[in-house]
Image 1: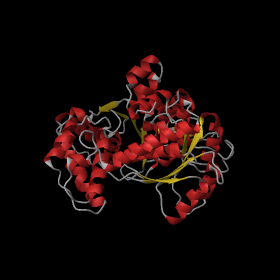
Image 2 (image 1 turned 135 degrees about the horizontal axis):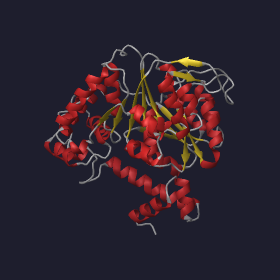
Image 3 (image 1 turned 45 degrees about the horizontal axis):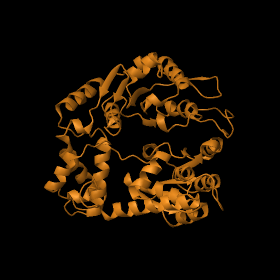
Image 4 (image 1 turned 120 degrees about the vertical axis):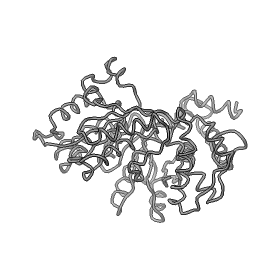
Length: 425
């Protein structure tokens, strides 16, 4: 759970962002403009700042400048309209961690981007399971860890692909080297090459000094490249060259820099089908998939659900300094009945919310916010704010629904569905 500062002059869009982020388990503070955001930053610490590009008083670009000038600044993500992406790229070059477009590609895209930028809790190789098939996979992982070969980890989002990569690193001769994680889906296409392979001074506007890429950072260790299927085709060829020749050439440079890196890639796509259709280079697929570890979704290993729930309850209680809560029988039944589309990551987030809310008291089914039964007060509050955001957007646009949807950053279809849900004409 992170504390995120959301900065936008549109109240409706702030409410939408708040709902998405709170649903993912984060705490959110809202600021109406850059000046108010700076005042909040003076009074407290935030794990991440999510700011609109265009605002009165202090705009998003200036806010990036001022935040980056602070001691130990939080990462900043800039929200920008599709037509202003070059300005967002400039913000990244000034120090923003990333950008995302308005309207949002999807709520999940925002949640995944935020997760990729937050400090990760050190998990080690702690992969908790009693599923026989998964235990066989872990045995395979331990056998190949000592061999310096490429491993492709596949599975749905939230199944624990990074845990497998960390386990491979920890059990390998490279364990004393660095483990560097990169989410390919979160890399802006215009900056992906310099992020992975580095850039020389003057390679692009704002490159006022040479910078090593992630391959150089991971030299002697392991590079975990998550969502590798999202890499642009143009970059796939350059990645293949690095893997085959074990050298990188920085953007704007001609010098070849040797790198000794073990690559562990991960994807939630079927890369064999992607390569057959031409959307992913077949030669790169074969190079990455020397060993394939395919993780089952949580719904296919139901015996792990109560085991993981108790594991998370114990660990998260220690993290939040509360007594370890009991999971009541109805809570365990509710957990077992849920389909877990977000897999283990979703289960962890659900347990973290419950642990914090209950403060050491027994966790009941009603505390899990899994649907069914009476909605919690937090759910009612989110629902009220969503309805008010819809009405405010309609008022602002004079009832023009397409414009209201654009203002809220959602599709027109989603807007009509929400209006019908709320009985708004």
